[in-house]
Image (cartoon, rainbow, N blue to C red; front, side, top):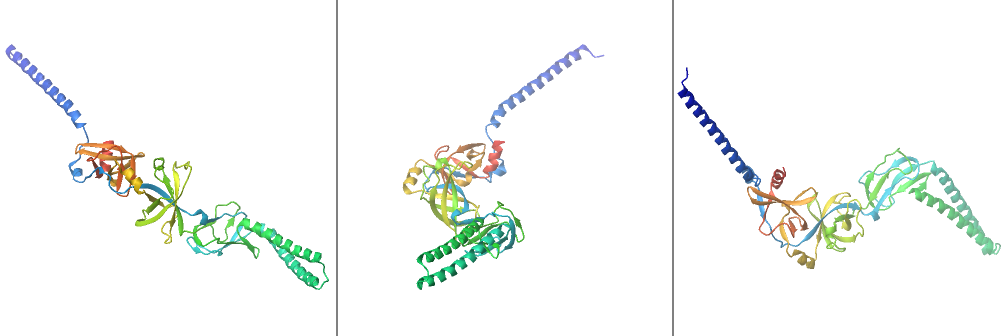
Length: 378
């Protein structure tokens, strides 16, 4: 039998233990509530990552400025030829391969077609009539010289020759619409100028139809055009006649120089940019059509001095382009980072110049900044 004395002391002890547990829980909850805001102050770098980041100072811009544009290489349309068939037939002969260099007048294709039969007959008839008219003219000329034929007869003989020539010219013009000349009853397609075969969609024996896709293309690649994209923000500084430097990722150490020949007056409806045309001498054939390039537009001294005022610069490798925005990761300390959106004013291969968003002395992350950016975003 348990005495009342022990029951009384046991109840006091139990009450004390419960109170202690409750106080302990309250203290832990209070500690957690105090720690939560502190942990939310910023993303803290792991020790290993902290050893591998690199920082760069934001400083007043001092180097020469270039406007950095993107562009695409294209063939000079004035020296570009595409053969589109305008009749039904069969390709009987192909005399070239993709990439071949061809000289003006070289026979490229031979095409047989039923549509050529009537033209061939007209051409032969016209040639026969011309020969007959020329013989008649020669005989009439001799008779006129001897006083046997009249001047009227001589003029009529000359008109017959001229009419026969006009008939042949008419047939040849009709053949010209098809893109070639008629020889041995076959349509002969020749190279219109010196150049390279840049596309080929035909083989010997292939049937063709009027309006098919181009069978081949010839382009003179020794001079190409670069079509640079000029955005609305650059319209006040990009002008016709400015010198440019063109670089392609395929040739990192090669610089192609040129100048802006023409600046379009209307925006491209698809890309929402103004197109600047740059003619580039390409005698080594390094630049290929459809190749993407970077274009640096050199500013004159006045534009440079005006643009350089109040601009800040930082390394180009610190820039992050995401969600159609230019951004950098700004470093405060190992637990405090900030993602800053920027509007670049100028950009070179090595540096970006801005007017707002940063101040001199700020530090931006230049290596492993994408890791930090993603951690902050997540």
